[in-house]
Length: 123
Image 1 (cartoon, rainbow, N blue to C red):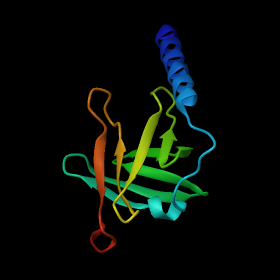
Image 2 (image 1 turned 135 degrees about the horizontal axis):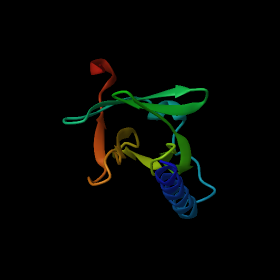
Image 3 (image 1 turned 60 degrees about the vertical axis):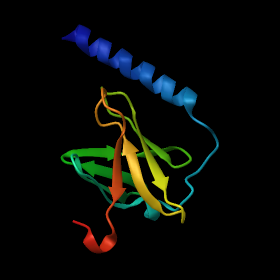
């Protein structure tokens, strides 16, 4: 068990180093944090909700809670203890509104695209 723990810890450290080296600095989000909040939906994966808590974005999908930190531009990162960091990318429509987001929920599948649910029909 100790060996598996050490391997997982090493893999996580390498992934964090890679994420850190790819980061573009200094940047900031293109919108106020409030603009990133709302419910986003995927037909197979369901609803992913984004809220603000203590001046940071918190995403919830099923029972998973992702505490997001700004990474660069409109991309936020979530560091889990034993998983590779997850980069959540917020996308805009032609009017500049946050309209969707992508997140790598499964390691063997392309990033999953969630589309914003309009406020009036939010679940």
